[in-house]
Image (tube, rainbow, N blue to C red; front, top):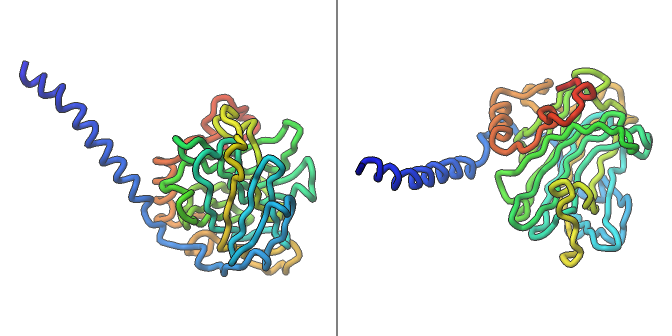
Length: 300
């Protein structure tokens, strides 16, 4: 039985080699999307485009970097000076390392102040974690949602191919009348097309950012809560980008595109990069959740 013994000896080694090869491929990051939508939008400072929304004592600007933080007394949030009906909305964000369970750091579009209980929202949310597990980036789209239990989330959640606590990375939303594109360092990770008016946000929105305690659901469905022995929890933002059509702007304003052709959709190279991310790092897709009522999410 020497050949069988050799197989038993070699199998774990071969598995280790294969695992290392897969890890090495993943560590290289996604293939180039071949186009950088962010390069078409000028950077602005925080004061040029935003103001505090809440928790002013938990917010400071130092050399073009905004820091907001959460402790046991309060979190903090900010909002754009103008409301938009389409645009490119982005910032470079650096997250806190260590124990951050229960804490959400976010960049999102919303019109909740104009339509309370019946608002639209497009979210990039970083769900805090325990030190042994990676952050989860949650993308979400609400259409005429409410806070009374009838809200319909359209969540896709991802892990990232880098450590978002080690450096700043650019996160962005491109929203125009035909689609929503979520981008990480100019790599498209999700495209949400307009399939009907009922499933697509069309009313003007502000851009917001915030850090807050979402312990009931943020980390493993609320298994791990915010632990204030690790406070303060911080989120750092810089390289703000706001480009698009304001709500009061001219009707001739052309909404931005995420693709090099300046039309809707993505290039073949961009689709390849997005498919790589979704194959390797997508960890939840609401369309594939058997617990969801699919009559409420016809876009799936």
